[in-house]
Image (cartoon, rainbow, N blue to C red; front, side, top):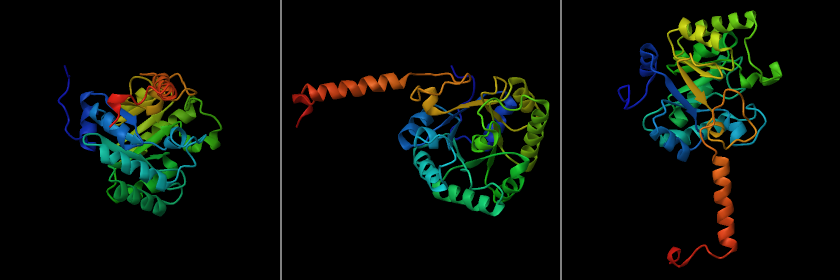
Length: 271
């Protein structure tokens, strides 16, 4: 039995209400129409069209190569499938850092061309002007602090962030800044659980964790990771809910075998 009243369409207002009521928020990535339709029907609150598409869809080592046009294409496909979830789109590397005018142009394109509901940008004080400019146009912005994959070459590692006091304090300051600017929520990635709890308690907007412990206001995972499609990425924070790699491989092998043995198609499968 559901412990909460079903939401017909998720909005920023309802996400903040969920935090206030202590109802956890479920967020998951999607990059195409078919998967997004299934995810939406399953009751996911937020669908993130992540720049992780660069990794899981295009095979790149990092998120950096994916372009604004690529992200808009993926987002458009996802939005067509969604009836309930709130759709957030990652603004890709090089489309907003250091230039608030370019940030606004990028985000306007995402919203107009894809029909998405919000954008997500990585960073705190460093991108203050871009966040302000985008928010001034009425575009909802989700922040992203902690491990920021678009800055991988700056840090040189995907290890846990904000373990030291100075960086932890900056994260809390950035969280407060993003909240004050008007962001509707933020993702905290791969940081100590106690720091994520402190951040969630210190701001009134939803904090979505990934590798940030159980006290965030919600959780997000990459679709291909939690379904077991990805086989070479198994961080500590990942809970694998299925082994689709195994299931799909067996299905493909059976398909090949049936064709080779001439058992497919049979008489009932022919016209």
